[in-house]
Image: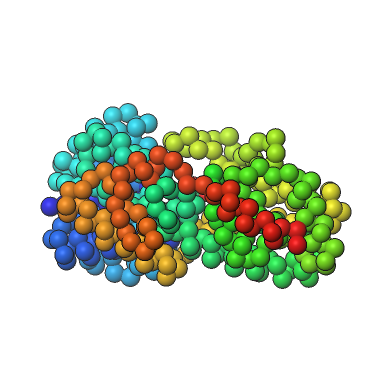
Length: 342
Ligand code: F6P
C-alpha cells in the first residue's frame, strides 16, 4: 500500500514535522510506503514525485519550509487537472493522499474526495483562520517572530520618540496581529475584522506620546480604514482568486506623521513570519496531526481533516475546516481595546 503526501499554499514552520510523522508511523506502525509529490497540487497533476523514506525524513523535524516544495496550483483551474491526478495516482500505485494545506489546498482536497479520490487533510497556516480546529501549526511560530520584532522595535522607537507601525500577515483574519500585539504590549492593534477610524488611531497615538512613551501600532495586512479599500501590492490574483496585499502599514505611518506632527515609520514583517524553525508547540501539534492523518488513511477515513480541540486531536469533515474562515470574534478584539492609547 502506498500513500502520497503533498504540501500546498503558503509554507509555514511545521510542514516537515508532519511529513516526518506520517512517514515514520506509516512505515513503522502500518507498513505503508510513502511517496512525496512536489509543489502542491502541481505534483500529482504533472506526476512530479520525490522519494520520502525513513532516511529522507531524518533531521527535518526542526527545519522550516517544506522538503516537498509548495505552490498555489488549483487542479480545478488546469485543463483536465483532476483526470491527470487520477491517472498519475493509478500509474504510481498510490492508494491515498495526505494533503497538508490551508483553506485552498484543503478546499481542493474536499472536492477531490467528492470526485472519488481518497484524501485526508492536515490543516496548516500561520493565519490560524481555518474553521473546526482551535489552532493550526505555524501560527505559534509566526506570533513568536512578530512579538520578538515588536520587542526590538519598541526600544528603538523609544530612543527616537517615533511611532512605529508594524505590518503583519493576515489577509482576512487578524489573529497574528491580535496575539503578537497583546504579547508585545502594542498600544493599537488593527485587524481586518474591524474597520478602523484614522482619527481615533491618531488620538490613541497622541495620548501615548503625551506620556512620553513611543506608540507601537500593529496592523494586519488586510486591515482597512472605515470607507477605505484594501491596499494591494499588485493587481495580480492567484489561482484561487487571492490578491497580494501589502502597504497598509506605510499608508498609516504617513497619516500618523501628518496628523500628529511626530515622526512615524513602518516596518513590514512579511515572509520573515513564515520562515525558520518551528516553536516546540508547533512541532508537537504538527507531529500529532501527522500521526492522526496516517491512522485515518489506514482506516480508510477519507474526506476528513485533523483538528485540535482542547488538547485532543480529532477528525472532522474537510468542509467543516474550509467552509467558513475562523476570524477574530468581536469580543476578543474588544478585550484588547483597554490597552489602546494608554
Ligand atoms: O496564507 C498565509 C499567508 O502568509 C497570508 O498571511 C498572506 O497574505 C499570504 O500567505 C501571502 O502569500 P504569498 O507568500 O504567496 O505572497
